[in-house]
Amino acid sequence: MINRVILLVIDGLGVGAMPDAADYHDAGANTVVHLADAVDGLSLPNMEMLGLGHVAPIKGVRTMAQPTGSFGRLGFLSAGKDSVIGYWESSGVIHGSGGALYASGIPPQVMSKLEEALGRKVIEQRAAPIMTIFVECGDDHLHSGAPIAWTDGGRTCHIAVHEKVMPADEFYQRCRDARKAFKDTDGPVRIVGHRFTGEAGAWKMNGRKDMVSEPPGLTMLDVLNRSSQITMGVGKVYDLFSGRGFTKAFPALTAAAAFDETIRMMSKLPRGLLYVSLNLMPDDSPAAATALQAFDRRLPDLFNNLRVGDLVMITSDHGRDLSRPGKMPTREYVPVLVTGPKLAHGVNLGTRVTAADLGQTVVDALRAERLPVGDSFFEALRQG
Image (cartoon, rainbow, N blue to C red; front, side, top):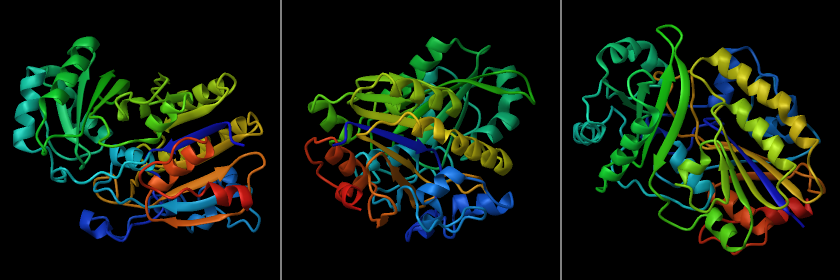
């Protein structure tokens, strides 16, 4: 019997282009394979033991004859390739397009509403990775006081201000006002407010809040909540569901802080779901490899705190192939690695058509009501 599920979601860890990747200009994308090639191999012994080498041909990662976990790939039926889409679908909600993606930048009509809500003109509007924006626009922002706005290519608008430009409470409230201002189908699903400090050449992130519309369907969090299960969120995951269905949440600015909080919570959570968001993948390949390997080295800390009745899942929300121009999210399959005391070893879960299978498995394992979409693979984990 499963009492607790620990679900770790690594941001942007894709394992190969989906069949429709060309529709998103992502044909040939493969985040982890290309990352391993860029650094001449990855050392991920703990995920290797769980079966990661069976999911993709990753330089430095062996294909274990007898993995200690079960493994597979998750696909997406939702339109898009960002965190909102990834988290929602893996929790049981398949989301349609609801409007055009911001592949070329924030549309003018969206920018106009953003500026109205922020009470200021903004600089930038293109699609770009976060640190590129800071390097190129930080000085201009600091001197002009104009917030920086950009997109990740999906239906997300990112906004950043330096702590000297606007107080945190005012900035986050204006971001909330901006999210509420969009009621039409072409508006953003998510507005992310970033605060930063420092000077040119040494900018430092100092806070983040995701303002997201509520999922348009029943999620595993809703179902678990109805079943009186405890649902704890660590990192940005709480914001991605607008808090709906969570018992409590713990923000974490870094992946290391999120992992620390996870270990702390494991001694306090008697039952239910511990849902953890890990932003591990910076824009630079060597730094991303270092962060991913550091996460892998910490996994024994988690495994050593498991009890009989625990189920651990490691997955992702989308790809972000750093070898591609722009270093933006990519339309890829994501891995799913599963382990826990008394669970089957070495089960190939295959390529799942929808990530909603993961959410269905979670509610199945915790004996909650079935979700409208997704096929559970919990029986395979029990039988081997």
